[in-house]
Image 1 (spheres, rainbow, N blue to C red):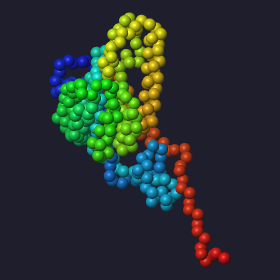
Image 2: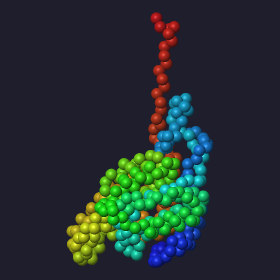
Image 3: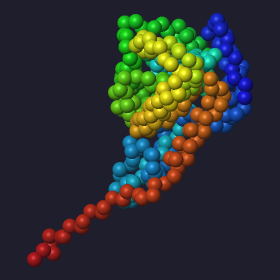
Image 4: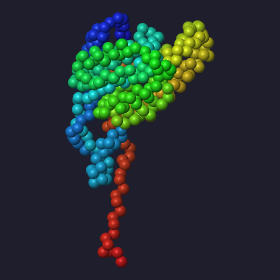
Length: 327
């Protein structure tokens, strides 16, 4: 499938119009009728009661019914299509990297614009927290096309933060966002997760209160190095400059091994945090990426519908002996 064409020097309006014609028009047909599967809001109207199933939210357990029937039951609410979504955007220097025609930041901007437009067209509100060495800007939730344009403009115009040199601290972004989002929301964390350690616990806490999707950005060159001879490389996070001999087959093998180990560790950390994960390469075609996201949501919905192998049953209370029967 043909890749998207990169348009240089385009305005925010031109960028959004390009995405509406090249991505959203195709998604309108492919995702027709799948809106409730793709993104679901939280409702307040009680619709039904059913037995507890694996992956159900324990906060929805009805303890009165559970005690009466001796089987855990949960309340089922009518889903509200109106929802609030937050984009937590890691715009640190490592996101500017791109070995091909597109950088990870450009892919991030297009993905956010398409998903935000998809949401706001159905009356939902979107907001954002922008991070680069520190939280640089907060865009309160709003709806409409103007809100998407404002979000896209802030992503494109976000400057580097020279006041916070060094490695990225994703935990600062996650902790700040947790204090901002008072209402249960759908949260998209867009980052390459090249960060200091310590972000896993804040992400886990965020997932306990909100529905969190981690959109992991990467570039193919971060997984394997080609044979290019002597190549100067600079660490985007620290600025350290190194001369690397990519002609050395042993070095390339060690690089690939370390990259694979980091991949495995990152995937385990995201799984432990209890979040859905979408991997998005810098050169991915956005329509295909969003279809993968839709399939991810369908799989999660099916997982919630599968009953657990063993139900947790409450032990009935031991009957007390009447006082009159005592000798």
